[in-house]
Length: 187
Length: 164
Image (cartoon, rainbow over the protein chains, first blue to last red):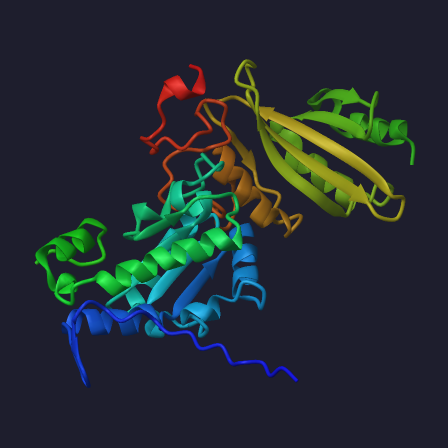
């Protein structure tokens, strides 16, 4: 009788030097590897893209495979802000406040046409893309995008997380970026 | 309740201020002069024979080509007779102001705020006339037919791709 073998998945090791019993690499890469496979996403779902995200989190597409099993419904314990859906101008301070409450390092993914550019809602009441209020790392096109596309966007975030130098969040460029968005005050 | 019963009662009470009566299609529509609109609605609600005690809707309209370009439209409902009534009143663009009916119908409070928010119609005597749906810093009234519907802050639209 055939027995089912358990499936083990593991991340590829980063670049480094290996010898029997020894593996040497940089701190950046080890931390990046750990972070990129244990991202806690904060879903900010306002419309149909949020429905697609529910499918993405469900058993069939299973975002948990990528280490993102644990959704964080508090911004303070979240690594990745996933904005999915139309953001009205009246809601933009809320999105910005949620972003401000997240601890560094933090990433943002704009899922769907509305979050990326306002989409079809080119009108007085809708924010024309969340990158007007918070810095965005990855944009996922689609109206709404399929779960595969959301997963692809999530994997691009994983690439960014894995390759990010530890110094980046302390750099002047990053500081200037946040000042540009009004999230940090100029000294 | 017959349409003529309502119009006769209103004509007897308000005379020349009842500007127009239209019962050709759907519900009876009565256009009244804006200075008496408050009294007309109060009369329709309080008169025992009429009893329009429910305000279904209140909204604004903008006809930029007309002399009296701003309008306010009230939908009233007599729940006992299941009779509906539409009251229209128009104001000039120089002074789009009308007396609030929020002391007759409390439900008019938010609807008048919404009408102010989108058309800039001033409801005199309203207890809290400020924007209700749009952002506070919006510096125009978006449903007036003098502004483009598109977001004016968007820079990435190239007219060539939109055939203009």
